[in-house]
Amino acid sequence: MKQLQNCTNSAEQNEAVADEPTGYVVGIDIGGTSLRLALADRSGAVRARRSSSTVGVRGVDALMPFIVDGAKQLLAEVSAPPGALKAIAAGAPGITDFDAGIVIATSYLMGWRNVPLRDLLEDAFQVPAEVDNDVNLAAFGEGWAGAAKGTRDFVFIAIGTGIGAGIVLHDQPFRGMGWAAGEIGYTLVPGIPDMPQRQGEPGALESMIGGEGIKAQWLSLWRPDCTALPNNLTATEIFDHALSGDPLARAILDRSASILSQVIVNIDLVLNCPLFVLGGGVGVHRAFRDATEALLKKRNMRAQPQLLCSTLGADAQLVGAVRLALDTASTRPELSLNKEAYKSL
Image 1 (cartoon, helix red, strand yellow):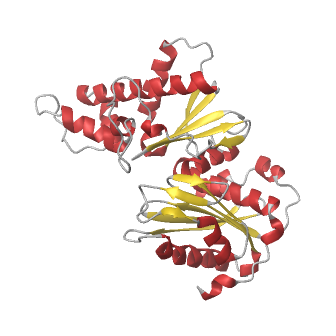
Image 2 (spheres, rainbow, N blue to C red):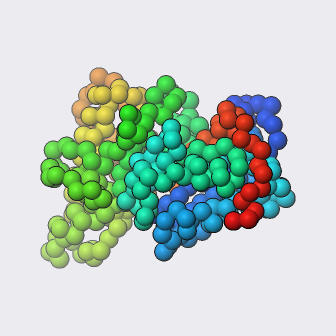
Image 3 (cartoon, rainbow, N blue to C red):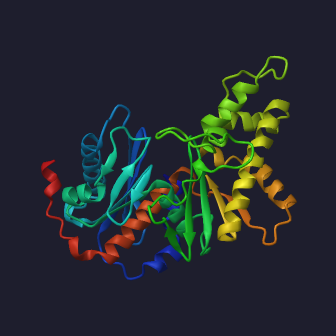
């Protein structure tokens, strides 16, 4: 909580939304097994936040009461009436039509296909709402208050269970014609399987250097005569042991860094961005970043991009959602009437 409050309460951010009107906005991070909400005032300072488990919650109809109740409780914490809410923004994993506010497809949320999430939020709260891919929002957050602050062009690469990228060009998120820009988990580079992709399955890159892919690498190479470590390590535990000198763990770290460095080189050749930010539970591991950076430097690239770890960590998506909600409140005030319709939900 402290990290989120600090990153949204700096003087520079307050200047960016000078002379703010009164009221609050809500940012939402929808995960595969959790829901997080943050309430911020119009200066961007977070005043309250909540998180809840959504394990076993199937479909958007089952999730909406969690969102509505969570927003009510946040407003109650700051003694604000429902009418004080001016906008809301949510991030969801998967391909999201930003223009229409529709979550098209996601493998992390059961029963979500072509979900009109923006309309559902606006109907429930009677305020303007926006919806975007969670990695795009994480990039938005890093550009506003994190490692990419002050950088107009950069790529945020999230490496957790899956892999995705948020692309920011000229201070604006680049989503692509079909809103699928940045789906780099399906990237093909030497050393990873080149097989037809089945819908709903991890992409080729994810199968190698996503969290589950790194675990699979470890399991496929593990033998008692190669290492004294157990065969059920997580990706970050493998990287920890690589730093401690375990040869098998080091081999997997080096292989993963080699693949990631090739992906970054390919993206850089197309976009020529000066900065790449690594996020996600696996991506922020310092050993992974350092090994990847060392390989990038060996390539003697004409314009060497900077490689940084996220400074917002797990809060990047939530910070980005707050910022998107602030922008929405400023650019679409026509719906900020708040008829308290959601009291009945």
